[in-house]
Length: 142
Image (cartoon, rainbow, N blue to C red; front, side, top):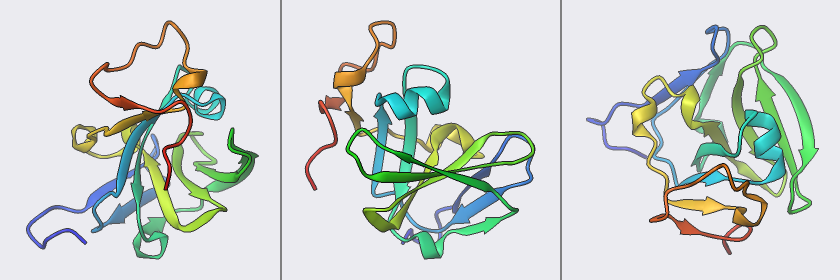
């Protein structure tokens, strides 16, 4: 949990119909170049903050969900706004307590501080990433 003086993380979709907020601190922040993230974002990668306790994230509105098999073979559930179509969070069947939000969905996207690049093996030559980030060919171990 964050300390009381730190503002919660909040954000939502483009039109405001689906919102989230949490007092948690993200446990993982990454850029991901897997094909699913490329297709979902419409560009070369997705950028996410992952939080440890899905149950402690307050979500308002009624997002639509769809499941997809990730490059790892594990199922990811994407949540997006049924009105504007913007993605608002991800859940993972293999790690049901976790929830991830797209960095650009934050009310203050400058709070995103990427730690690593995942699925570099799927990266597109035209999607240059920060060379100072630790890069993994797939997902890092545990």
